[in-house]
Length: 364
Image 1 (cartoon, rainbow, N blue to C red):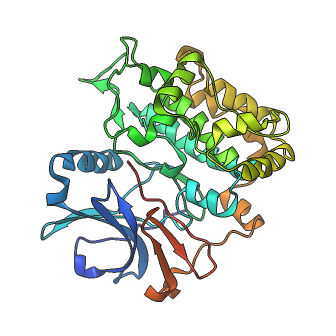
Image 2 (image 1 turned 180 degrees about the vertical axis):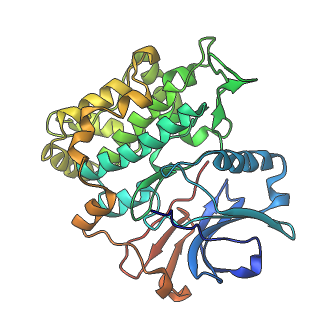
Image 3 (image 1 turned 30 degrees about the horizontal axis):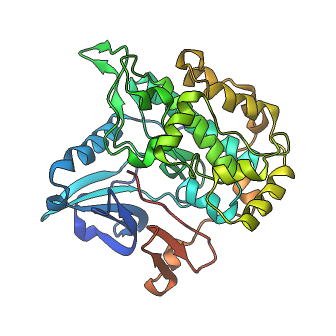
């Protein structure tokens, strides 16, 4: 059976119609557009940078592009082409019709995904992560806003601080430097990355970050969001860990108050929702194993692919689960400027067409 031919996206800016601005990226130095490729009428996402605005940081943008060119996996974000026109740098990427998992979750399940959807996302991301580690790279910025959803699968993005642990053909035993531009990812980073000591860290730091992301997607809350940076670091060094909030963990008002920045009535409401549900023992074990304080005790990403938690989604996928919960993608052909309500505060797209589409483009 012949493989489907890839659509040839060219480097002629006149062949792309930038329909609407979706949001900002890279510290507001880049703009992301919903665009249409005129020759094929295919919808894409276009990132546009003014080269002069990037200054010394252009290397991070180009490094991300270089990494994506080196990867070829269905669960790793790709880009179609990149080119310069006048003083602008353009990247043409696949359009993720359901946006990031963070925005999709907050739009449909503000207290966290149902377990089948969560595990489908987790399976896809883990497959991409295992491939990444096999290629000799560490992601270093795994979080819900860097996981994108299309009609059939979850894909891992946010590769700006991705780095290789292979040097001159040999494996580097440990890395030591804190990822650049990592301020917004501190809550997801492993203790050994934050410790900045002589022991350094390995690709198993990504496994820890993945578990933090599981808690984020399960609870609808950014981990350690109510903590100061110093307190978060102290808690991680002491071995204090987030958990999946359900009837078995029975979070008290005090515990919830420490994990979220909210009013008392919202805390009570969330507590009632959390205590009315139950995650599987397998998902609890998966999270606990990945959050081991000692990285040597954590399983590798490839070992996790055979974890029992994935048995429940053997015969289903994201597409089927979204259909079950009546989550539909937006008809982009029908979108006009007056259908768009841009939220500059959160750099997200919100459409009044009933599709409930949001996309967080902040990939720092």
